Amino acid sequence: MASGSNWLSGVNVVLVMAYGSLVFVLLFIFVKRQIMRFAMKSRRGPHVPVGHNAPKDLKEEIDIRLSRVQDIKYEPQLLADDDARLLQLETQGNQNCYNYLYRMKALDAIHASEIPFHAEGRHPRSLMGKNFRSYLLDLRNTSTPFKGVRKALIDTLLDGYETARYGTGVFGQSEYLRYQEALSELATV
Image 1 (spheres, rainbow, N blue to C red):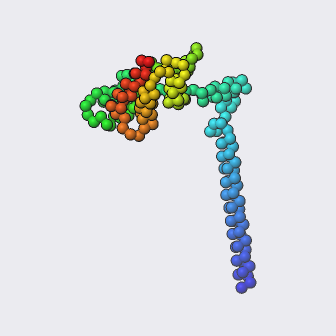
Image 2: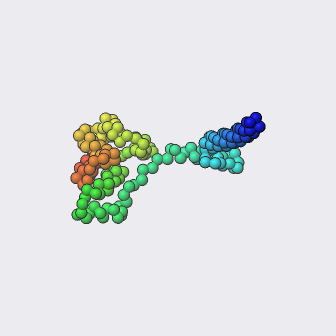
Image 3: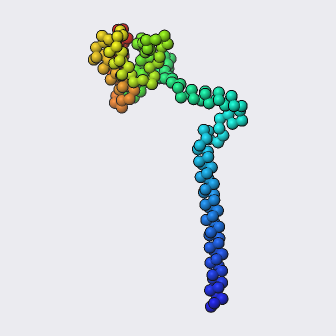
C-alpha cells in the first residue's frame, strides 16, 4: 500500500508540473499578444508608420499633408442634370417611392441658387460645416440685402431644408415645390 501511494504521488507531481508548464506557456502567449496589440495600436498605421524608411524632410512633408486632410470639406452634387433617376420622376407611377430624389434635388438646389454664401471679404467662403439656419438668420439680421426678408419666408425655407435633409417623413413633389418657391423668392431679394 505504501508503494501504491508513493507511485500515486509521483503521478501527481508529474501532472502538477505538466499543468504548471501549460499555464506558464498560455500566460506567456497571452502577455506577448497583449504587448504586440498595444504596440500596434500606439502607431499611426496598422503595422508600419507612414514614411518608415524615408528621409526626415520627406516624413515631415507627409505629416504636414496628412494633417491637412482633416481640413478638406467637400459637399458633392447629389444629382447630376443628366442623371437617369430624374426620368423616374417624370413617369406618372407611384410618386411616393421617389421621395429620396426630391430630397436630393432640394439639397442640390441650395448650391444652384443665387444666394451668396460667402463672407464680405475678397475670398468666398463655403457654407459647409456651418449651421444653415443660423447662417441665414445672421444674414437677415446684419446689414446685407437680406435684412428686409420676412421671417416667415426664411422659416419656410429652413423647415423645408431640414425636412429634406434630416426628416423621416414624406418629402414629395408638393413639399419640394414649396421649398423651391421659397428658395427662388429668397434668391430674388
